[in-house]
Length: 255
Image (tube, rainbow, N blue to C red; front, side, top):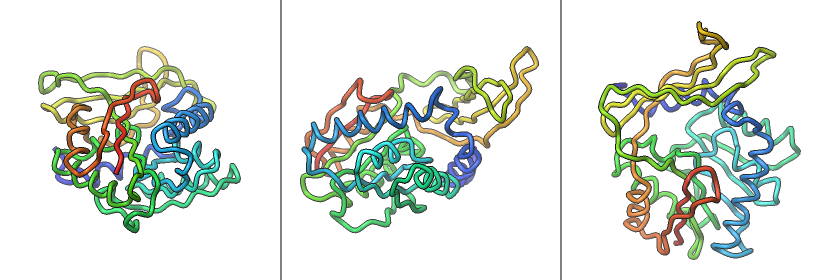
């Protein structure tokens, strides 16, 4: 077990940032699709007055870029400096305004009540390795919201954890990196409700030569229902699960 899980998250995403787009078969299409899906969700839940957004787990900007392209005022933050820099460069390349900075979701650099909606997508909160830490992050999210504002969290739908020591390989399929055909995969190693993850790009064929690999990072396989309960604990109302909006279950809650 790593002595500093915070550092492992930064190292993982700093390493992944240049090739994070390979997580998606078509990143550009996913940016547009997720922006459209989230815009529809924001309007349906909290009305057309939602314009000021805080993406508190921005990464390289998959959601933030799509929403900025639809006219939202987006401020993004993330633990990974390399991810924040890439999100900014991607916004500049597209002619979009996207303010970004490095921040821990448990200590956001935001004024109270400054956002109409807060986003924490792509299973980011389970990098916090206890329910207590997730509750701290959710309290920061609600602090940033104006009264009546909303929070959107997307999470993996975890089932029961397998036996400690179990290793799983998640194959993302064929990709091309710097003109070279390869496959993208995740390696999961379980130790109770906690598991370690690394991404690998491997050459095709039986040898499966590793072309690129991230350092490992760690997740907490927290059930979606437990995160929904924690949203209620910190003061969110009308907390509910929404399926079919993004590729992961979504939780919404209102301040």
